[in-house]
Picture 1 (cartoon, rainbow, N blue to C red):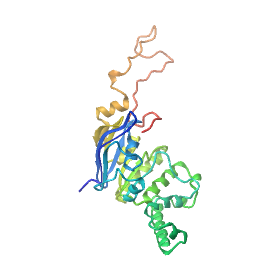
Picture 2: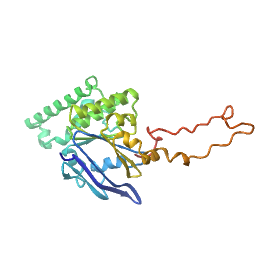
Picture 3: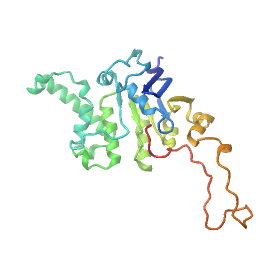
Picture 4: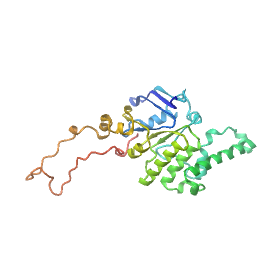
Length: 295
């Protein structure tokens, strides 16, 4: 069996900044592969390189054995790579059905004249597109929202609609950019169920960027940790989370690098902080780093 996607020595530079530096990995069919790292690690930049929004400075990407780094985004989409975005990119004044139909656009083979006169070929294509979208609506339990405008939907439902638009493309590889961003605990758990079903029921391979390490641990087969555009560790979720370089990247250094404990207040014995004060040296966990910054 050959890998579905291969990233070979991929690099991109913006002026003097190397956003991605000599990154290599491969993704196998029917795998959930996750990219993690602090904000600014280059995760979304890798997504943009794979989907054709950026051209690499060095290295290349192959999909099913074919180099795709020189292709336009719409050509890459036609090959079977779909994606979602950190910030929801939907047509707010269109219905859920209409937004999902947009996902079928890359598979349209009729020309504008056929569409203008709604020829039999156009009607056949439209019926097939609608059948595909109805299957996605049923898969994601969006029947109740089919004819509603996206502008009036809750945020969590919009995230599912964007996922549905990507699935409507019938991709072989699905790129999910922070699928749990902005979701509450229950919605995040439900998103985990969708990702598992996408892998097991639809047979779609998933490449995911995610900060929620609970979700990453639950659904990922393998994880790649990045920091400042460079690879830190590759392996299972447990192996990567316990890797010293990953811990340092998230926590900002080992315990001995932390500032010294302040001396006790005058008259104190140093065994406990003075009354009314607040002291805490608890380090953040491997959850989402501080807000802000580009991933």
